[in-house]
Length: 337
Image 1 (tube, rainbow, N blue to C red):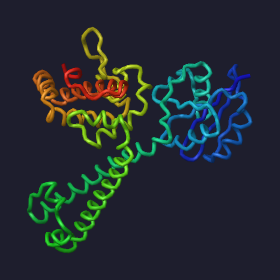
Image 2: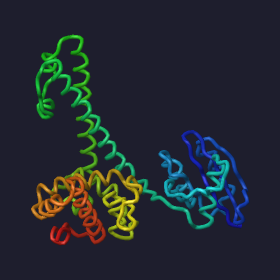
Image 3: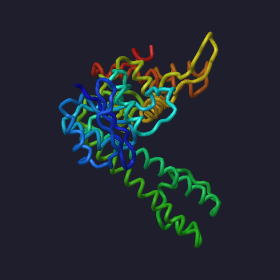
Image 4: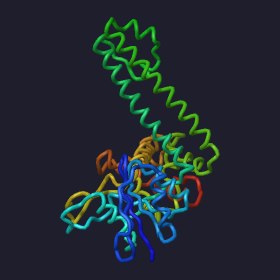
């Protein structure tokens, strides 16, 4: 008899529920997040196990990778798209794990994409760069406001980046000087970390044909090209350009009935890093490309500036879909005609 396994994953433990074709529970237990304990249980049912469903939590990497490595058929549940049975009076971790297995048995499990482990590290490293960039901006703004309060000077971001340690010391008196020095040191460290990440990512991305294709878009540089390629993964997982643009959050999330807006859908469904990359590409593309600029200005005359940029981002996302699918360079006329 075929068995189906659902795993409700938490930070320090998981609940495993295995059911048969008649929805009868064959095994159900809470286990610590120890791969040896989990494998000991699953190996007993491996011969009859159709697949294991793992909840798509923030910490699923280690479990999914180990199960795949051991030859299990693993499905990643798309958590936000899973329908819940509203008739339940009481829910707990056991019922959640059982529900995942039940959806798998019925063949209606909303699945998430399991990004290949060998490429995931580079993608996550580039995400770490974005975190450091945001933190560096916080330190820069903090130092900028500190200089304005204590020294009465208005300094631009580039001027602050060019400062030396001795110049920071001359601007402040104790005890505020120590705070300024530490902020400046943190700013310098963030800059060094960003450069190290960029050097490592560009070294590995330089051999990618897809990276060169995306880099041909006006206004798209090394960071944006690397982000788009790595966050997209396999373009074959998207049925069409509209699906890809939706994944990049470049489509409208309005709900309209009889010409009237009745609310908004899940605008945050999709990849926030791709959304950022295409909005940046739209901004710089409207500067460096005459064709993109004409399209942007035409949209801006009718709608809000951010709506116009989102329209450009949508066009670029659709163009990227065909570029990655067909391995063709960017064609401005086809994308913005």
